[in-house]
Figure 1 (spheres, one colour):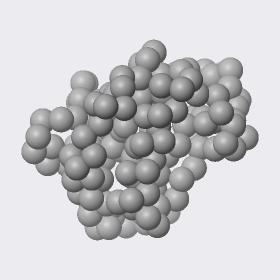
Figure 2: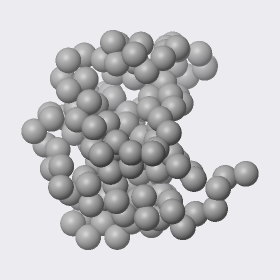
Figure 3: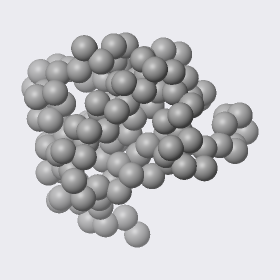
Figure 4: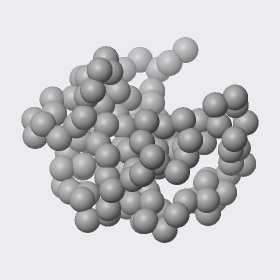
Length: 134
C-alpha cells in the first residue's frame, strides 16, 4: 500500500474482483485486445492497476474505482509513450501531459476494437525499436 491509495491488490484476480461490473466489462475487453495484439507482453500490477510491457511499458488500464487516477468513473486506456504515436484519428486525450496519452471509456460499447488494435500495433512497433530498460 502506498500513501496515495488505501488499496493493495495481491494479485490480478484481487484487482478484477474489486471492480464494479461496468468497469470489469471494459477492463476485460481492453485486456483481451492488448493480449490479441501483444501476446508476449508482460502484465504487472503497478499502482494497483495493470501495466503491459515488453522492452518498456507500452500501456496501462486504469479504472476510475482505483484511487489516485485522474478519473472517478469509467476506465482509461493509457499509452506510456503516446507522444510517439501518430494519433491519425485524433482519438487520444493528451491534456497537459508530455508523453502519456489516454482514452477514457464509460461503457464497453464505446470501444472501437479496430482503432484500439491500430494504436496497440503502433505502440508495439515503437516498443520494438526501444532499447531494453536498464
